[in-house]
Image 1 (cartoon, one colour):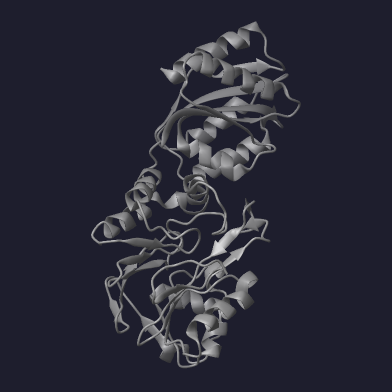
Image 2 (cartoon, one colour):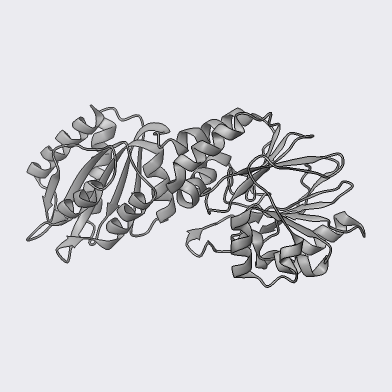
Length: 388
């Protein structure tokens, strides 16, 4: 276990998983993931969430090492998703006197996942603002529905001023991964939580009333310094505001001609003064990275081949992902390609029209098989328009 210092009496008992290839069976995690769990030692010992089944044995070993023969009096369940909740029943069986703390929805879902003996007698149902005194420490609970399941709640430890944020402020990558926080936290946020920006804003409003000295999420590093930076990032992301002035080009090319047009557009944007241009191949690059960049920049250009009287499926998948994550308030340019009856542009526009605050820049560029002088001139107009 990585040596992570919280406080003298609040211990990190989580596990780094370096063998996982896909988080939630869909997101590439080249540097793995951490399943964070915490033990508060006091007159009453409290475990703050369990871990995924992939980490059961190591987690129990970490817990028992910190307990040093003592018992667990409470388990606080912030989130019932299996990567955090898998070991609830096992822990309940190991410590039959342990009480389980959650809200009404927590226990509704718990009964769907587990068969815990005497759960009705063992459960402590908490509501907004309720407290639990452990001795030296006092826990206060705040509901955070849809960040990112309905039962999610966060816990504020009043003595040390620590906020346990469930999946909030989470990040891909193990704790011993040496990398910038923002990149993988951004990719995590927009793909895991991104649909629920309004709910995150509501949680940030609650958090603003608390004196927070440390943030302990269920994935990723413990945040101890410069908290304003991290909270500001979450405010930007959950408000659907662009983070950077730049253009993201996402393309889906079958034989390479649409790809060639995408890279020509990159050159034109740079020529006409774009501050930043990012480009990704939707057929080969990580889709989660593409979602991240679409939200990061204030302008988007999509370029795709026509396919079966529609649009090439990787582009359709990308746009449907954006729609499901509440993509909004962006300038968008469209480039379509087709040999006999170009259809990609119409299909892309139809999906974009279902999103809020999308400004589609003219002209929509149509390429007939390969770029020619006419299509290049149209691309120049589009580059100037989207940068205007």
